[in-house]
Length: 138
Image (cartoon, rainbow, N blue to C red):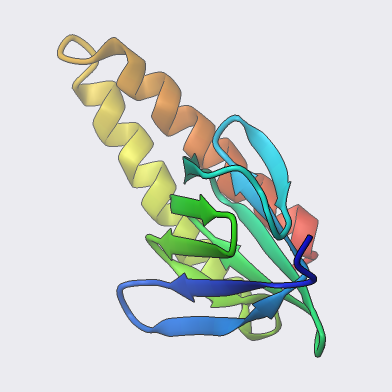
């Protein structure tokens, strides 16, 4: 078994990380999961949460709103809609993310007849974003 794998985290704004990692905790849509070297290949969607990366230089954490993770035996690539290092996260960032989620929820409520599951998905996104603030204590 390999000791490390390549980890890459990118968002539309920038590349946030490209490093060797021994374990990465990701907020998968179906629940949190830890990815380690030699993991079975998988593609999953992400929900709002914290990506925690453990590597030779220590642990780093990133807030993500949503996106995808592609897992291979020797690498993990996270493509996030929005990602911010936890140590750069401010109350203003969180308020902006919650406001975006609230706007999606309100828009979904207006379009209820077209896609009934859209309201549930938007409500879950809003709840996840609000809980994220409590989790990172800002």
